[in-house]
Length: 78
Image: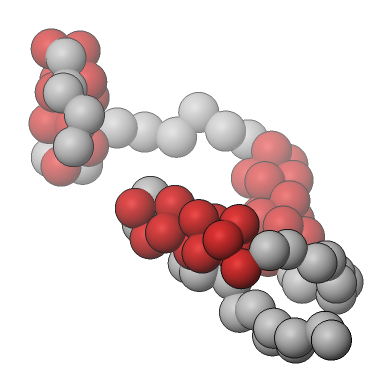
């Protein structure tokens, strides 16, 4: 875990005590919610060819960073 400086500790403490208040307007919140929904939509399929080594490296890196490993349907081409 990265080190947290004094300012970040202060913000975290205020957050945990529910002392922070939103400054976003209702219009901004609606815009942010729409952007979040659009980001989560998975409406495209992508087919790419990778060497087994490259695919393994991608999966290892994703696990190291705590992200989800993409669902990869591998097909061996002769």
